[in-house]
Every structure is written in structure tokens, then in C-alpha cells.
Amino acid sequence: MLFSSKHPKEILVLDIGTASVNAILARHAAETGLEVITSSRLGLKLLENPDFKSMWRYVKEALAGIFSAFRKDGARVRPDFIFVVFSSPWYLSQTRIIRLERPQAFTVNSKLLEEMISEELRLFTQKSQEKFQLSSEGIYILEHDVMKAALNGYPVRQAVGKKARELELCLFMSLSRRELMEELRNILEHWFGRCPVKISSSSLELFRILSERLDAQEGFLLADVGGEITEISLVHGRIIEEVLTFARGGHFIVRNLASNLGIGLEEAFALLRSKTRGELKDSLDKKVTAVLEAVGKEWFRLFAQAVSELGRARPLPQNLVLVGGAAGLEVLKKFSGSEELSQFTILGRPFSVITLLPENLDSGFKFGNIDRKDPQMTLPLLLSLAAEKYVQ
Image (cartoon, rainbow, N blue to C red; front, side):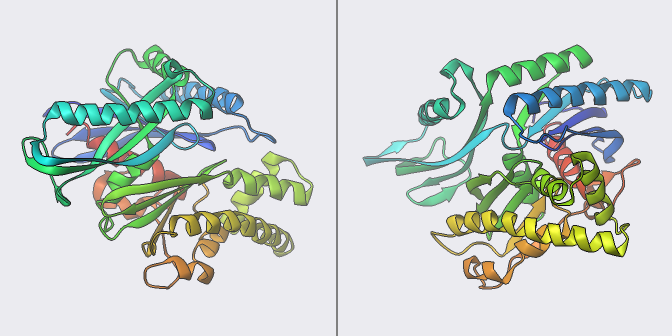
């Protein structure tokens, strides 16, 4: 929790991926919960060969466009709290199990925990420098969260002040590029002045909010299908055990649709939207369906590889949650629920595929003008519920 107040607070939630930037301005009050004041979504430019710098440039342009639109619409945008959540590849994450064992019982104190966590963060930063080709000063730690602690093999809610011979911590960490985070903070201060800002990863925040709706002990797979990247998180025993990504998302489908039909990227994107709404004529619908089936098989090939890797140690949870801008595509839902993946699940059956719509979140919201059946709004709305936890 960043702050607590009996008075209503305005929260600006920014969901930054590789397909779009979503913004929700909401009002939180202890008595009435969360109410959406206004929302905006800008798609990022679809590139033939996307690169990190170009995508970030378009993210900044989208932010400027959204904030300008808020002002033109007459919305009084002076948030009390800004919550920014990045999807992959804007961050890198890792879960580590840290163990400390001694012959004699020792007392766990805050200093000991801080030293153990600091060492893991140092190692994580060191290993990430090669991936990003940056110095240690160029790395920015987004967050670190002790998801679970155990003493002598038994989970405990609070380890500090207790004695044990063996201490085990499950630590989730994420980091990003410092230059990006500094640019983002400068942009936010330019538009809104100084106010509390929390920057986080989609893996951790979605885990937290979905764990309230699903059985986090039994676990679930979470597949965030973004524009360029699909990120899969394995949740089991109330922790994020592992996160894998592969470079296929909604934009991969659009590019292949454009290539196979001999049309431009924007036209292919519009065609895909029409297909999703059932607005295509039969002849064109058959052509689009054939392409989607072929492209879906390529996405599924990489998805199945990731599932196989995640399931190498033990069977996977039965529930699979699809979120993200492309999660509403029927072809992806069909393939992810394939019989072929039954061999990896705990019940030996296809995944129970869960795709949430905004209307499924009714109990937590007053929606304003948001379309309750728009699957692209599910992710930013879930993140708004996560943001609420920081201001209660």
C-alpha cells in the first residue's frame, strides 16, 4: 500500500505492451469501490521488422496522444496515483529459490533477509547485463517480492523473529532498462506534475489479482498474448514458478494475413477485426479462416514447446488463462485447448481455457462507458483492480 485515505482517490492505470497502450482513469473510494471515469486505447504502429527502439518511440507517441485526448475531452486529469504496468519484452523476470542452512538454530532477522535478497538482486543484475548489453548502472530493478518463506521446510507467513536451522525464500524479481524508466517518469511529470508512481510487471500484478479469483495453490497457467510476444507464467503453490516467452503474438498473425492475401498491414488488421465480429462475406471469410488456421498452427507449435518445457518436472495445472489483445482470437483459444496438450496436465485432459471479458469483472467495477464485451479491455481492467490494492 502506497498511501491510505478516507477521501476518494483518482488512479491513472497505464498498460504498456507491444500492440497498444491502454489508459484507464478511475476513482477509488472505500465505500463504493472502483469507478472508471474515462479510458483510452491507442494501437502501436505495426512494423514489418519491429525493433526495440522503434517500438519504444511509438509507445511514447501513444502516451502523448492519450494524454492529449484526455485534456480535449475535458477530463480533469490530476491523478493522486499513477500505476504503470509493462508487458514483455519491456522487462525481464526471474523466480529464485534461496536457501540458508546452518548446523545450529539461528534467529531470522530483517538484516539477514535484506542481505540474502540483495545478493540475489546483484546476481540477477549481473546476468541481465549481457542480455541487454548494458552496464550495471543501466539496469533498473522494477520489483522484488518474497512470494513464500519456509522454516525447516514448513511455510510461514512471517519469518522474522523466529528460529530455524533452515530458511527458504521464494523470490520473484524483475528489471528493465534505466533509460526507459527515467524517460517514462519525465513524461508523467511533464503531463501530471509530481505524484506517487508505481511501475510493475504484468506477470506479478496479474498473478496477484488472478490468484484471488482462481486456486493459486492448485495453480494455473497464464498466457499473455501481446502484439509481438506471448508470455506464459506457471503459477503453482501460490508462487510464480517460472515465466517463458516466445516471439509470436497478435502482430505475427496480422503480418501473415497481409502476406498471404497480398494486402497492407493496416488493411489486414482491419480485416481481422471484421473477422472477429463476424462481418465478412462467405468467400472472404473462408480465405481469412484458412490463413488463420495455418498461422495458428505456427503459434501453437511454439506454445506447445513452452508448455512441454514448463511441464518437464511435473504435470501442469488444469486451468489456462488467456489475456492480452490477441487472446480473444478464436483460433488461439481452439489450439491452446488442443487434445495434444493433455499429456502435460494433471488430469490428463485438455486445458480448461479461460478467457475473461470485462463483464466477468462486474463485482469490482463501475464501468463508465467501457464496452463490457471487449476482450481487449480485460487486461487493463484487471490491472486497475491490482492498482486499487496500493491505495486502500
